[in-house]
View 1 (cartoon, helix red, strand yellow):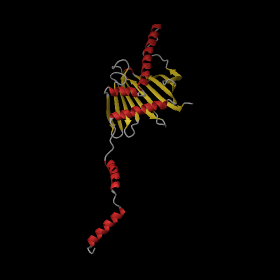
View 2 (tube, one colour):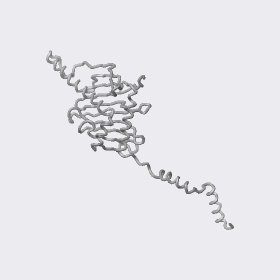
View 3 (spheres, helix red, strand yellow):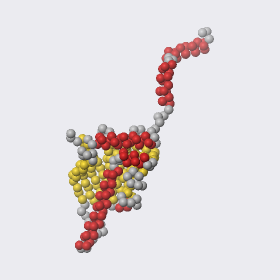
View 4 (spheres, helix red, strand yellow):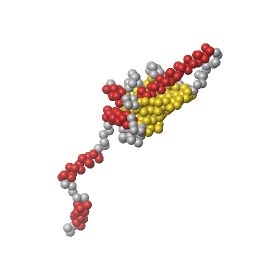
Length: 258
């Protein structure tokens, strides 16, 4: 120990041994997986795994939603002019289907633009045109409820047919799962999912009424109730060729009295 360099090395090794004692063989074996797990990034779910988690979440939310009632407000517009506004009380019936009770309804009774009051024949033509638009509007509004909320069974049909795809929208944050031929041949249901939690964020639908030439787009914003139940907060349907827009808003969710 007369050599000062060797003496310094000895004391350095002693301090290190006291401060950081050597692990036993068993401790080293237990710690190894932890170190390895920290070194390797966690594998992300595959598209099929994400779809499976999505279906489970939809099924759970559908069951939880049966305990709620809410208000559905539907506003139909033509060329930017509001034509009707309807509010309905919605809840699940004993048979498992959604029941709807109309609360109020206001319809615009104005004559169709461009139709002049030139006698009884002109009035009949005006009424006929108005009925045609109304029927189309009703069909468009009904179409919303065939896509919203998404049904796990139809999603599975698309997966089985090999029509599922995935697109990264925001790396590490948001991904879109797409399901082709979801309800009709040639349509597409896109589901935006939050990557860390796999929570459903939004739905985008490209579909049509009578033929693919009659294109319709749906944009749906999803929301979550305090118990984790997901629901369609707002849906916008656009039939560009017809100048028709249908906005459906679900709000005022409350638990039904037992």
